[in-house]
Image 1 (tube, rainbow, N blue to C red):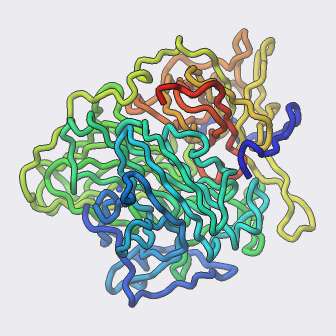
Image 2 (tube, helix red, strand yellow; image 1 turned 90 degrees about the vertical axis):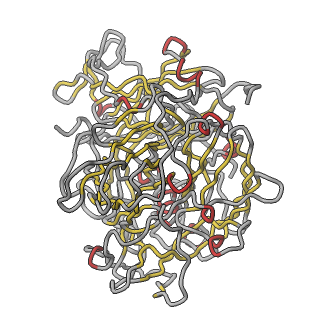
Image 3 (cartoon, helix red, strand yellow; image 1 turned 120 degrees about the vertical axis):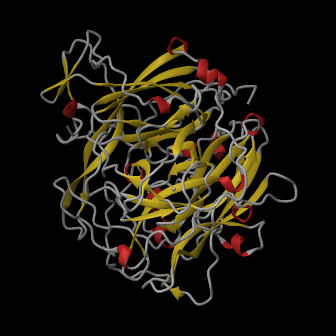
Length: 633
């Protein structure tokens, strides 16, 4: 269905969210390429059994730190344009992928069923579909045309919960797909609206303006109600934009520039991808069965997958490397540090962050003295300097973010600590690359934009409601938690806010976010849940104004004379968040303020939480950008 034809509920007909009381306060990864599949692999069945057994000790089957890390910018791993230039022909296919290869392991080579983007302009082995998808590398200002054809004729092998919006039993045999260019200033018809999907056998042409400056974008599936499954199955990849300003910087390049997508997965005892089917009711009790699966509120895997390989290793020379980090996980946050491995000591690499989601940092490179925190969907462009470190030294990319992430919970059993390994090897030659002292302005207008330029302030809420769904046997109903977005009502005249009285909006409710082209707005995101939510706005880049703790007392929030929740004065935003953003971490018990210039294209698009399980279960809202197109676009 065309998104513009989608039947939304009339104004005034809303779904009341009963807020759970837990939802109020803050709690106190250049070596190698994507491998082709050998003929002698162990074949995993295409149709999964009705009940899988999760592999609880994956390191017993897959020895960590033996798989070479593939480089998504290697020539064989780049999407190839057609003879007419920036025209690409891509199919979405059922195929297999080898996550781990090591002689002697129980799973020395297992071929696992996945979804993949196949490059139809590439007749080599790498054109058959890779995990993750091959990398688009484009020049800023030169538009690209991509034809995506859904060829998932073997169906979806992961459990589908038909109680969430958009999903149906048809998705098992005929999975819907639509590809979203994440971070791009894209015309809405090519944005990847979650309702503008295609079933197997049907193509979809996307026209990308590529007006973004040099940046680390990515692309992934966005089908309503099954995004989490399609992405988990493999439908994601990098979209790298280059420009002349970036080329003039003399940053590490070639083999020394490596995009790194961080993901987490589970496997069953046979080597299939495992995705939980139980879900939970409001009391945390499992409510799903293999025959009638229920979406979990979040998903956290027990295996680190980096660039499609399980716990990989990267050999690095004692020199500088440009690493473009992307958190491509469904729900997991990463708080990263490069630390000595296995009791090692001596010099450690220096990490300089130069960019964020949409381009370079506003204030120049920042040397990180603490860890690098990334929510799902966020990116960080860093230069890691291994100079002066002895050959043979090993470093672990370590994560200590708790799961679910609540803004400040680090360590504990719920973190996935081991991500990948770096090993310093002999130098092959001099390093002439540099860490620039200053950086070009990716979006000069955004950097200079001030709050006074905004024509409107929107006060939006992040809530946790309760939905009633049928039991798996159909004999009754059960309540489960449901994350939602909403609009803060007019509370003028009240002294306090009881969050339990708020309503949240569902996907089908009337559009409430209706900015105008070429106007700027301030969005205030009030997080009344206990989790950090990565909020993503389509087709724009914005900047963060600040993050402030809300004034709370006994479960209620203080209001000022205008009925606006009061906040503390201290700005809690991290300094390395000062750059072009399309995804922002909204922490619990805080208001996150962003300045959004809608210097983009008119039309209907979306904004949502980028925890995919939340996005699939109503924490997504339509947004309609009105007005005439910008003549400069």
